[in-house]
Length: 400
Image (cartoon, rainbow, N blue to C red; front, side, top):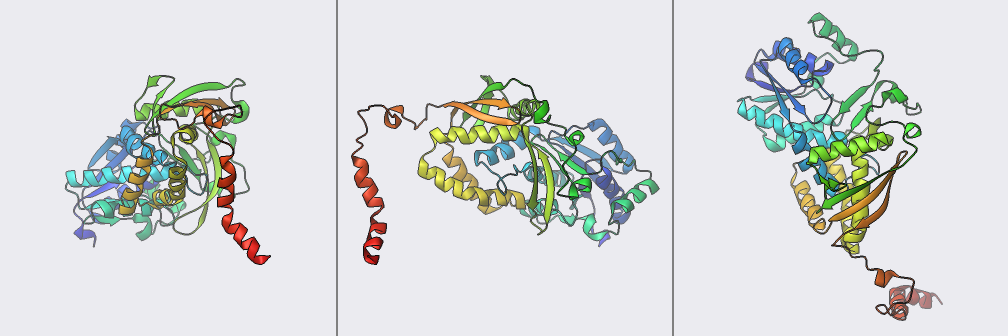
């Protein structure tokens, strides 16, 4: 089987797992391996990643800057739909996987490779997200998932293998958990977090300060949208990646965006995760608030009924599926009128909408006022109520 593979593109981060995988692939398959790293906004010394990849045995290291594509085509697309998994998770890891996989498949074609590999374990969601994406984009590629086939089935064995082959081990006692970072969020899981009763230590967080240490004075911002996409902060237009980076800084400074939950993985088990999504939290709250004046009531009801299914598709790895394309078109059609400005108050972990305006607004004070008006005949409401109660009235009469 190993001899059938001619060239492999590995999704590579430079961490312990993918460094060991890189060396293992070279030994097991005896063929060229291209180490591909995706820059989606994580803090990383890319020169060191490149050097480590080459030193560990990669025949070539490719680093792709995907930040703008990630935010524009994946994050903003999902947030136009108000995507949220199980009522709280803002899908930071889930949204990153399809953009990584798409570029990996492109590189495989460019490098004339016939196989792709990843470092996801056989217990997690990422193996599903990567591999469904590979199969949707190029089913002819051989998929190599080392965690499902090798004998290095523990962190202890990985470290021993790394030491044997002279691979630096980036794991310390000061970081007894796993983390994954991109421009939308950072996630923490495993290790000390596997006990769902234990509160995360404050020193763990990177993107946000604690609400207790946030400034005592609120920060006000105005976030402008065009057809559901954020385009400017306080009148300053920004690119998608720059926009999310700015929102991250504003949210992080004010202690916004922390989440601690136990979620249901696609493979069946429950998993405790801790997340920081400062910019995404602000974005979703502002977007939903603007929709209150720009979306028709019945359109909003139908759209909201689809959000759980849409979010589940993202979480489970079906970004490139036909049902996802259908839902995305539906979500985007609903966004045609979602343009305007939301004023937000950021204060000690809270993001509070305090004003909204739009040329597409359906809100008319002349109809909603409690004062005297000339446009609404209040006596009409009596017939409206009786007609809506008719079926219940008939049931009551029958029982009587």
